Image 1 (cartoon, helix red, strand yellow):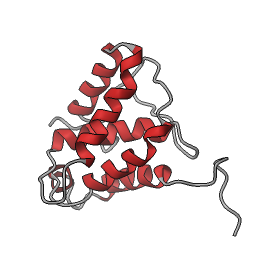
Image 2 (cartoon, rainbow, N blue to C red):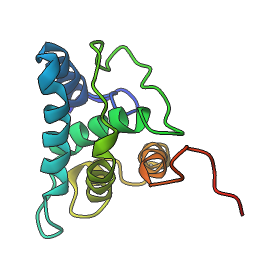
Image 3 (tube, helix red, strand yellow):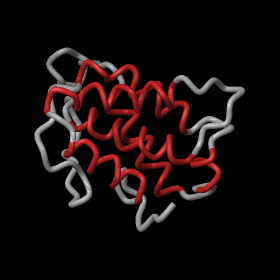
Image 4 (cartoon, rainbow, N blue to C red):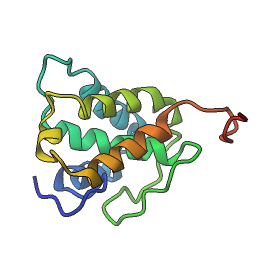
Length: 141
């Protein structure tokens, strides 16, 4: 895996996934994101999550999170350049996939062992993907 930074698209696998999304017909892009997330989420706790599957899942989750309230745009030349459909319906499966990425046995978690910056990126995505008030404003305390 060629990696140059801690962002969701800062590795060869995620950049390739992005290119695949751009090459796909517009109507197939949401299904591709969903399939990647389900592949990671479907790896049970007893199964070893492959780093490539995890990299794609982190990238896909970032695309979902970018469309959610409090989500930040994916601002990198390695992200998809073509328009994406509404992915917010994949919020729960994206959160589940990220949960699996940071749960052993996960090859990507092992590769980033002890790297707080990478874990912070993933935790930030998880926070955005958690359900909140419908209008995106913080709840009153």
